[in-house]
Image (tube, rainbow, N blue to C red; front, top):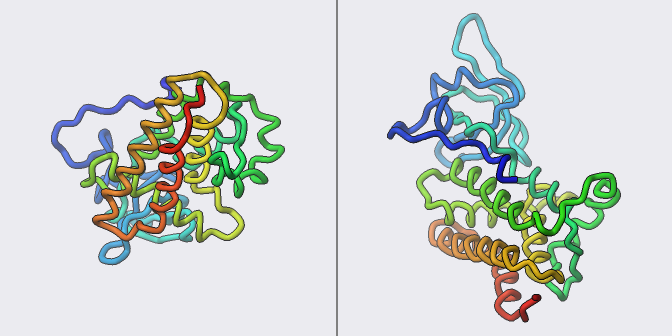
Length: 255
């Protein structure tokens, strides 16, 4: 999966730009259908990830856009409220779902740390049977790639926050969204990621690199979420992260 990572552009001090981290304001005229963006709702509206579905032009005026917000419907907005995400990074939720469906690591029962598996088992179902399996030896790199996808989205939503704090806060908010979703709890990628971390830590295997990758990512997310709690109300969602962390702390080595 290392080959899937896009090459990061060199930074020259500019805040934004179409050839760097994204485009805002007038530069957003270059946005096309399918572009992944951050929508800034202004005071009280917050920043949300979205995808451009329509570009509207009226008699030479500045274009405006229809943006679909996952779980939040559509927005019609001017380009000044949009920031394009750097290209090359797929949606975190899609990657988490694909890796979860294809991993060869066996699922866990509830008591062994598989609490996040429960709402996902039916969703994985027969679809995974038709896909090529992802071998256990590839899971360490898969986890690192998943972490990078999460950090990329998190930093786009909160550019001022340190990467670990932004990622922890992002995962905590996704867990909250998964909890409030009706009948489709796994679609945001949060439960898939935690289920994968649980499998990497507790399923039988002898891959020390995988144990290290899973423990390192979990530690980053837990500590980042704790730091984010100082700035936002993520207490309830962080409880889920802490549950896995506590399980890790009390676990016997698996290899």
